[in-house]
Length: 465
Image (cartoon, rainbow, N blue to C red):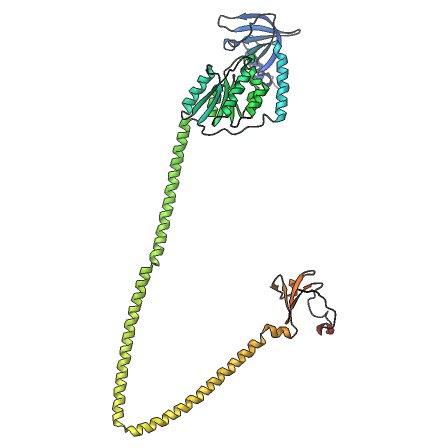
């Protein structure tokens, strides 16, 4: 048998406290009961029991929360208390740390609020969640012009984003006329040129925040043409407008934090982007410079002036060679002329004339013979080419009974290109017609002799074009 652990009283109490205090369903709960044994300390804290017919619950309301009370706490009155369950470790007892106390008469209003919330959710009023602008410069603020919320929002926005312009649309944020006043302020804000809209109010009792649960106010906020942020009450407070808004902050200060960026962070980001942009620009510039160098070398290699100069030098060289060759040829001819002149002097002109006439006649006969032979060869070759071209003439081939078969303007060269049902164009020597393929064969064996002679049945269906 394994040894069982033994807790000290403090250890067990701490373990129970952690289980209780971290339970999500024991936070911000509402408890209804009658106040008993109610006392207030010199520090302003309230201690009382909340009881019903069968149980008693110890309640602690600290002075910071008690300042928002709208009713006098006294034994014997029935109240609704909101708070979180905690464990008082010194005595090992659990208690309710209260954050708000209301008259029990608010129960009917809360039931109606639950029903209204469910109805508006079905209508889709809570589904609209638009992204907030990253760099808002015109900020609309709907709140009381005398409340602490206004000062908090101005202070935080001025510290984080001094570039923004805050446009105040004052209204009443508590009392019977608060809902109508807020609706009127919102409608004025909708007509202004704004980037984002804040609806805020400082903390208070549930009765103080009740105007923000008004149905008409919720519908008016839903129609906002720009993103909206609410910051109503404290972190534990939740009103109908918080559900409708694009973003719900826990407090007015939180709404201001969410609405604007931090100027220092934006500046740092811009600096980082500038550094990155500079590096990218340098890399791109270096690439372009190298590219220009490569192109410049290519241009230099094929530069027209250099090419022209090279050709000019080549022409000069050829001219020199030609001059030398011409000069050499001229010298040779001079020498030959000199030799012939000497020979002419040594020979009788008449004898030479007679001999030359005979030689000229012989050359003339040879030339005629060669010319006639060459002319005959050219004529025969020409006739052969004409005959060959005539044999290749498509019209003559077609006149022999052949045909050209096209499919979609493409000449058919193989039976494998055809399929049953396809439409063909058949070209003959004197015209053309359309046909439909009914059957194909890989050879000519299925055709009868009379089919070849045009006496059999035609396997194609023709159409007049």
